[in-house]
Length: 86
Length: 200
Image 1 (spheres, chains in turn blue, cyan):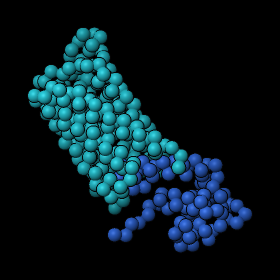
Image 2 (cartoon, rainbow over the protein chains, first blue to last red):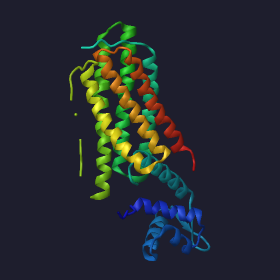
Image 3 (cartoon, one colour):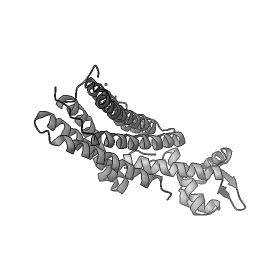
Image 4 (cartoon, rainbow over the protein chains, first blue to last red):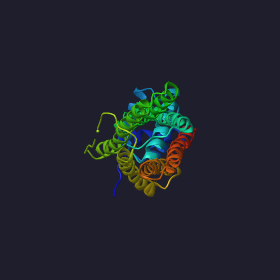
């Protein structure tokens, strides 16, 4: 069965990609496993919300973004423990 | 109606269990605030209801001891019974909400003074059993320590209700076992919280 990622899961994967794999867009694209146009749309959305900011070679997570990232990771762990999807 | 013994330690265990339930509801609230997923909101309300039920039962049991008004024990148990039913229904509906949010279907309570006994505990046993099966399936799929802890918590709560139900028939010794099982169930929730909250 094919599993579709929810919008929240994609955002979590994107933040994780930026956090783990540096600022480069190519690395973010690979790790987040998204096509370029969809990835850019999500990144624009995260920029608008102040969760990420532009860096020399791509993007980095803001302080607000890190707080949201931690909350999202905690929510994902709780969801997994209870058998929900994120 | 079965006579309900007041033991003292049960009041302490109920208070600790209610704290565990309130903590779970707090983290479910934070998860809801971050994700806006209705399943977290229902989980939060479910654990608040469970916590309030436990704390009301323990407070009214204490009040019955100090005021020497035995009727308060039935009032406390009524509150616990009704709120626990609501809690289990909310937790079960959180799974329905999760499926609804995922696939693009919904699920769903009783009243006057209810004395501690086999029938109400049988109802709670059935509802907690349904949640336990759901969590058992989840654990068999995920095989993670966190999903095991939640399954273990509801399995212990289920055993607690089973012990309470059986003790109301003819096994009074199971009263202590019931309290211990339920208490350990909430301790399992506390262990889960420690794991969930710790930074990764």
